[in-house]
Length: 404
Image (cartoon, rainbow, N blue to C red; front, side, top):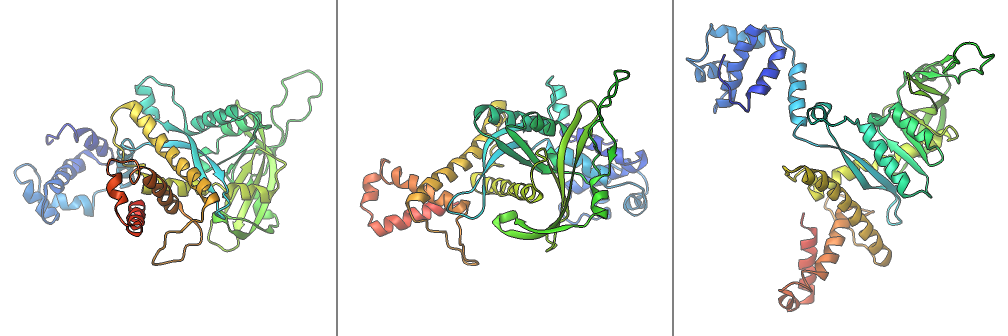
């Protein structure tokens, strides 16, 4: 075997699981040769780079790609796991807000928690918390802070856990969950009333047909509902109720709904809610209001550098991400107050006409507000700025505000 740098050896050893020993003894020199190569990376060129360090006939190295049996998927999984260790996964709780200056909703982050892989928690002696566990903690915090309010919590399929549904059902006077569901979910009727006192009481009733089975034999109801992006859409739906069961966790009464987009731009979806009194149209409208969180993540990355900070201290990591998410919310809130009192000029584009403000308009406006009150009035160069003609000063301020 060839000697490997200490930084590379663990990764290459994990990659070896996809190969037999003879195949790995040939793929390893080819990988090293591909790293060292400056010109073409043909098998012959790689062997030329590694000459004197490899054994066997050259044809055996060509057969690694043409005939040897080894799958790509395990290699992708190893590389993906290694990449993910360098990134962070945040569980973010945002509040969906409809401002007067726009027809679409904005998702404003208010709380965030860093998800840590199970292996890392075990190595550091920390109790592992899943993403739904962290979401439940954030939801509980919000409920505790605002005891006079009720909340509808929305989430994608990664948070469609029985535990999260049980939390919202336990706090059903204060919290409702609307989230993606599974067409093959196990649903049951409520447990029958106990007759007599002998034997253990049943914890669940008869098994109900899975939602996908109900959809196949049911007539769909057409309706127009609020849709992603603030518009409306014609859809068909089928719904039902049942008790969602998980061993050792009991039953949770839910209402589910299947949605088919008649325009065909969105795939078929299943949703459920812990509030069984909600109508199907309400469930769909609630869930489609979740989409702005995806836009928020995109804007935070593009305009606030959410993925660019580099920290090596734990506290810095735990604070910087949430602060940048909070900065997004602060900018929108400042912009909203300003928009009440002033006419907003939308940033012109060469390729389409903008009818509503976006985050780039919001941050440009807020930059201009702060720029005019700090750089142009309070800095050590304020006297020099005042000597610039007014129209040039405004032009300079506009360009500085739009720079990003």
